[in-house]
Amino acid sequence: MKIMIVLCMVSFATYAESSEIESYHNELWCEKQGGEIGVVLKNRRICDCVTNDMLIETKLAKGNCFEALGKVLYLSMIAKKKAGLLLIVDNSREWTVVDRMQKVIAHYKLLVSLFYVESDSYKK
Image (cartoon, rainbow, N blue to C red; front, side, top):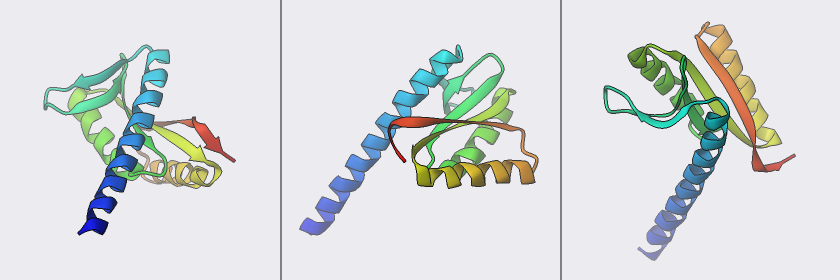
């Protein structure tokens, strides 16, 4: 029982840290693009960043970014805007995830713009 509680606490702490990192980079990036943060769409879904012509989801490259690809395609369809995905790269190994995402987008000819930033704690 104690082990389970500790694992839950570690999982929650990791999730909270990831969420903070995503929020921080989303805010910086979105403001530079002249976008609005945390927009609630007609279907009550929240989008990380919305500009005049694009809807962008922000995810850590090491996280569930492929799930975010599906989400941003769906939300952009609802909002009638272009889709964009901002990936936060935390270390050099995560560039393989960015590369895979680029390949999936190109292979299926998805209308998604892919952006990426290196986190403040980026490790080479």
